[in-house]
Length: 94
Length: 94
Image (cartoon, rainbow over all chains, first blue to last red; front, side, top):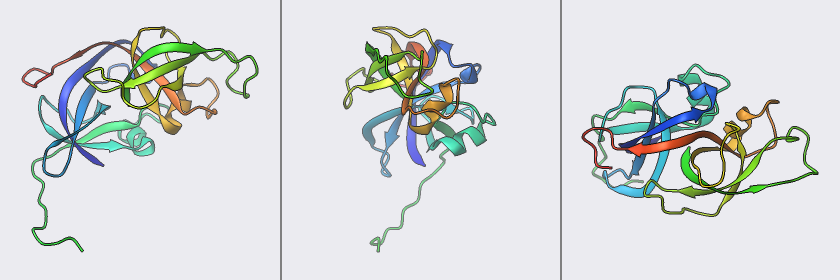
């Protein structure tokens, strides 16, 4: 999974039927320090994420379709959590 | 999934089974500031309505093949939505 921040909504009228009624959000990807990496992606919102929230993004199709309960959906990225806090060990990583 | 712009189309009369009659478009991946990112890709038109100049949402890898009439098929990118707008979620910076 990846850590990101909700940056924008993606408004679409014409879309694959499996995306009907689903919210597409543009997410800036972050490093563990919370800094933008310069990468972004479009993800389906599965948790009701809001503006500027730090989120957990699943970028893997099988899990995404399971979360959305849509076995045929052409979806790879889904927002699966809203991050409250990230703790890192202060010591060296071995 | 990511943003992209349709910059062309591909016609292939001789094509692998499963792709006959499927529209193939050339898509330049973009970041959310509409800056080109990486090299253009050939994508299946999963909404059957995308055309040159359209801003689209593109899904990569195996999930792309879920847009085909016969699943799975030999593709690695597909357009799953035509993007009307990328709007700030209220309170977030665009």
